[in-house]
Amino acid sequence: MHSSRRAVLAGLIAAGIGLVSGIASQHAFASDWLQFRGSDTTSSSSEITPRPGDDSMQPAWEVATSGRGISSPIVIGDSVVVTSSGGEDERDLYIEAFSALDGTRQWLRTAHALGRPYTHPTSANASPSPASDGEKIVALFSSCDLVCLKTDGTPLWYRALAVDHPRTGNDVSMSSSPVILDDVVAVQLENQGDSFSSGIDLDTGETLWTRPRPRRSGWATPIAVRLPDPAFVFQNSDGIDLVAARSGELLATLDISGSTTSSPTWAPPLLLVPGDGITAFNLREPSFPIAWENSRLKCKSVSPVVHNGQVIVNQGSVIAAADFTTGESTWKTRMREVKSVWATPIATASGIYVVDQSGTITVVGEEKSGTVGDNSATDKVDVLGTVEFTGPMLATPAVSDGSIFLRSDRSLIKLAHSTATESKPAAE
Image 1 (cartoon, rainbow, N blue to C red):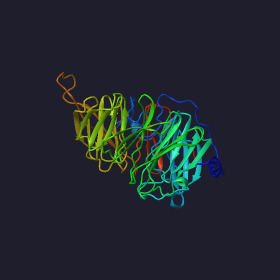
Image 2: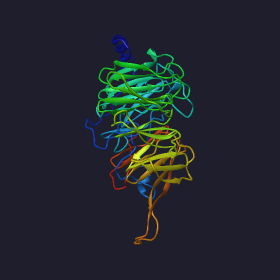
Image 3: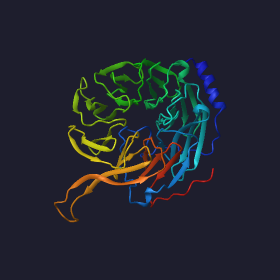
Image 4: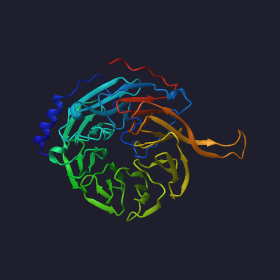
C-alpha cells in the first residue's frame, strides 16, 4: 500500500476512535497469554487453575463486550483484550481492554469495516483472535481490516487489506488469526477468491511481502518458528510452507496434506501438523524429517495441545493423548456432556478444559483409583467434573495468573481462585 493511502486510512480510523477511560500496564508479565492458544501456541499453562468442585468455578466477574465475537481473549499484564463486531452487517468493529482484576473497561477503540463483513450466523466478523508482542496489539477481522494499537489503546496504524485484495472473503468467516515474530505480522487469508499470505511491518504497517495461496477456503492460523532464523509456517491441504519472516522467501515445503481448520502446533523441536491424524516434523534436523505419525490423533476442528510431555487432541466427545516424543497413544476417555466443540482445549496443572459450544466446560484430568494409602492404586485419566455457562462459546480460553478467561459470543468471564482478591465490575 502506498504511504499516502495508508495515511488516509489511518485518518479514517482515528476519526471514529472511542475515548480512553483508563490506562493499561506497559509491563509484560511472565503469565501473559499473547495470542490464540497462548504465547507459545501449545494451549498449555503450568498454573493451578479453578476446576469443578471449587467455589472459584463461579465467575469472579462477567462483563458484556461491545458487540458479538468468537475471537479468543489475550492477556497483557493486567489487561484482557478482546475484539467484537456489531451494527449493520457487523461492520462496526470494536477492540477493548478490561481490567483482569475486576473487569472494568480500560479503553475502547472503534473502526468501520471496509471489506466483506458477511459470515455464518454462528460466526462473527470478530472471528480472528488478536495478538500482541507485549507492547503492541494487532487485531484482524473477517472483513480483512487490520488494526495496530499500543497496549494502552493508542492507535498506530490501520490497513484495509480488502482494498488491495477486493476478492478476499467468504460467507463462513475469515477466522485465521495474525501472529507476530520479530516485528513482522503474518496473516493467512485463504478463500475461493483472492487467497494470499502477507508479512506486514509491525512498526509502520507497510507490506513487506505477499505470497499467493491456493484458491480455496481455509481457516488455519499460521505459527511463528525459529530454524534458527525467524520464519512463519502456513498450512493447508496442499502442504506446509515455511517462509522467511522478513523477506517472504519460501524456505521449504513439507509435502503433506494438512487440515484446513485445525492449526499446526510448534513445540521445539517438533512441528505437529494436524491432517489425517498428526504428523510430527523435526524442524531442528536437516531436511525436516518426520519424527512420528499417529493416524488415531484426529483433531476434527480444533488444534493439538502439548502439555506435560503429551500431545492432546479433542475429537468431539472423545479426548485422546499420545507421547510427545514417540507419538505412541497413551490414553483416551469419553466426555458424555460434550457435543459440539470449536474451541481448542487448554491444559493447566489442574486439568484439561474442553469448552462445548453450548457453554458447558468439561475438565479432564488424572484421578486416583483404589483406596487412600493403597500402594497398588493407579492413576487414570477421567472426567473430573463439568460446569455450565451461558453459550454459545466458540473461543479458546486464555490463562493468566491462575485465572481462566472465557469468551461467550457477547461477554467475557473470569474464573479465579476464591482466595484471590476480586471485586465486581463497576457499572458502565
